Image (spheres, rainbow, N blue to C red):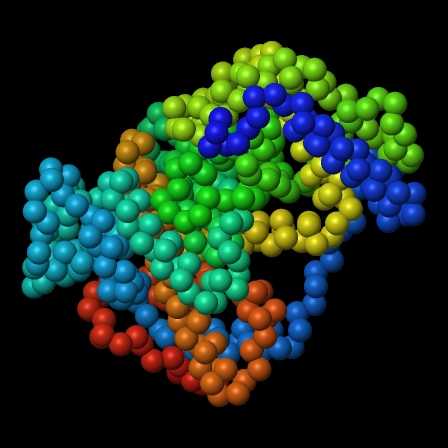
Length: 488
């Protein structure tokens, strides 16, 4: 309770929340009366469509120049270069039996193992005859004894820290905003860890890599789930399973990933929850004071929040939050325990009533403030770009995940997440170099333009063919001339 700074008596906290909710109801009602917020004949609120902001010529030219300046690189060489920048990346891979680490070119073998797993191509394309560190037996030994979830996590922590120290990444964000979403993979082999969903897998079954990224573009955590479960059950778990980075203060998810209880739990944990709202007009909105007059929105405020119920169950609500925060129980298990067959328990209902305060604040803010919606959309778009990079990397075997067991899925998709982060770091570092070079040449580089770039470009990275693993030179690669044709 002390670490979360939750009071034993919720009276003052609920009074403040009630005042905030009433204030935003009145503010949004005034905006609706002025025609700035749309309310239909059924008293449903609508948000205006977000029109694309035209890209200024300065951004278009900056993107063209910086993309052209990216050095051409093979994926194996990129991984080795990142390993040379981040010594903790390689040292995170310790022997499963606690024995001494291989001292002879372990970096080279790790790069081959991670390439094969992340690209889903198997060992064949990364085996190099005549190179001791790249024989099939050596690669298999390193995979069996060094690669597992905890070593992936340690390596990822080094990449997260390195990304946070780059000036360009700091212009993208402070690392305190996170987004959660899933990437779906068809699993064509028999597995108890795959489930059917025709929308994503057709007539076959599949699994989901649920991942969390921050506003600096780096992946903080990932977990493999059977089928396509609701992200909201696991979003909080990911927040507490981060490999590194700052604890998010804002959590963004897609439109199908939230519930009233998740709003309540995240508020107790000190995190603002901001899911995207594609089904906005159908959202049920809630009030505390039944006598309050909210003008044109009065009929929209048809739900009633029961503060007495929250107060009555407050000690148990706090215990639930403290248990999740301390790691004694996972948030996904808590959510399951608080609802049976879709019907909440009394404690679950009390937590949902608490969450409805902040859900309604979020919905009304979403309706009224376009910048608020744009910030959410930007993070969602950033995550979609990352998913696109992940699918581009995981191209082998038709992009299908052919691991039958959960541990194998975690190892392989953990390698994918790690290599996507390595590409993110590599791109960010060279983008930072390119921007600094342009500044030194007198080119007008605007921070507002940099904020609309992202680190997921991949045209310059070769992920196909037989893979080479040449140790990088001590200095970084030379940037290309932005005025050269693409095929130069």
